[in-house]
Length: 130
Length: 107
Image 1 (spheres, rainbow over the protein chains, first blue to last red):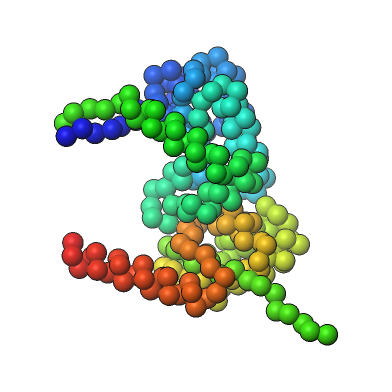
Image 2: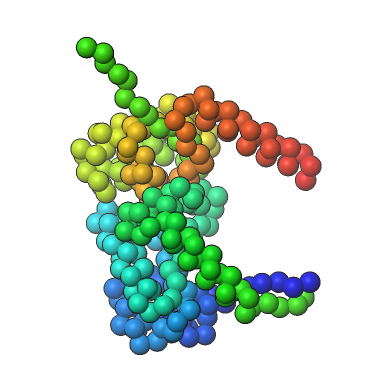
């Protein structure tokens, strides 16, 4: 049986090896990403982070997601917005994702189409037989 | 003059805390992110409090803001469904519950 998988990391340094890298603070990681990122990489942002923030930082986070999306467009990589849920209550519904994307200045339909294309291309490379 | 009732949206949410805590968390986030005027215009209210799942009501036009507030609320709350009528939302929730119960009894 064949299984598809993605290599994920929470270290920006792994951006050249991993399929998906968690970006915790785009402002801080921007310079590193500019130097190291390659086309086709996935940059993950978790909603879980913003839940724990105060109002000012949560608003800042929304702005940073928009900035990261524009950076991804220039660097030809993919923004991946995830819930980062550790329990069933931490999950984020599709409608909420769409509302969040719109708030960040990202058109939801376009984002989902791009994500689907990116995921298919990444998964096509990573298949293992078990 | 004919006075029309304002249109509303009903949102079912899943929460680990009590319904009042969940509603307070959402309202607080809504006010923090969009301000007191937007929060007042949203007129958020718990119409059917429950253990684990509750139904909230907000005004039409502010549902996107409420959805953002739900996604960023702490303690975490998850949107399950949204409808323009409470009756339809209840019917859909019953369907989901029936399907889940059937799945549980099978597994």
